Image 1 (cartoon, rainbow over the protein chains, first blue to last red):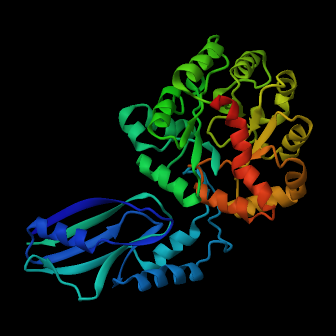
Image 2: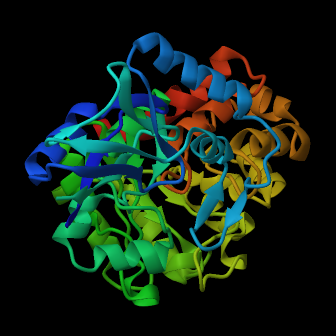
Image 3: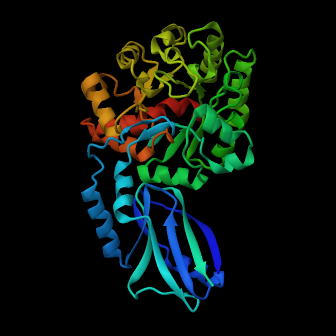
Length: 143
Length: 282
């Protein structure tokens, strides 16, 4: 069995955005040489997310809009304080909560060297507190 | 719009090029965020609607072993983009400080002076500092001083008291002093200095608890009445974010959320900064 881990850097360009990373994940799987197994994708950050949905702009907008409704920027969060371990204030609780509710990872089977996913399923890196350079991990387990 | 208060401490290109740069960011300036490519800095400015940003170094080699960016590093970034306005920093307790400042302005095209009495461990009202103020006045550049509370570990709060600056403000009437962070918690003292002396400006980069909107609401509507800014100090307040201690967009949103007139906001977000810098354009 083979286990491969790749770290992918992604420069987000807006405060919030949904970035389709499906082609990048499929390319990493293809290059890995693994024919049958599992691919797991995970963000390394707690104010971003990873989720799977239909890859159309209206849904991208709906997700961000309704996450903002669930976790308004101006809500009364305990996180709004000086973080002595970080040298700065935490006032992005809304971004953290969106990450929690939206999830931070997804998995798909690999069959005959290809990611097996539904025809509508698209893998999104979700930026909730950008713009920043982010890192997500792609781990492939198989043979 | 102009951000008059940013620190290039997380720029990865500088971390990779200069071995001590990362240590200064982590242990002297004290910030734990990931280092980011320079592109992120510009994108952060874009997300906030900021066109140009003042880059501030701190020459604290004597007091803290490493500078928080050098004049040369700030000049290097400023040469990369016209969106950056580089300031210089010198150590007032070094005899060559006035000469070093002149060289930084003339040779590196830096356009202001940044001093931090807490981090640099000097008395902003002392004789040594006066020699640097005199040089800055001669060079026709503004001086931005850290005033108020400092987060930097190992630094004291008291050196940031704005009233220590009054003798210098009186002595160097031709030098524009920008008191950073609205000198929080000594906001009334800073306001009084700005009300009395036309060569005193205040920057808005104050955030010590809560969110930017909440903190601005407290400082600018309850700690002092907002009318002081709108009616009296509209020409002496400049926008500053203190990025990357806080994202620029959050501070811009906080400022814009205040019930000031659009004319007053324009002065704070652009016109007052342009006036402070115009002599350095000559």
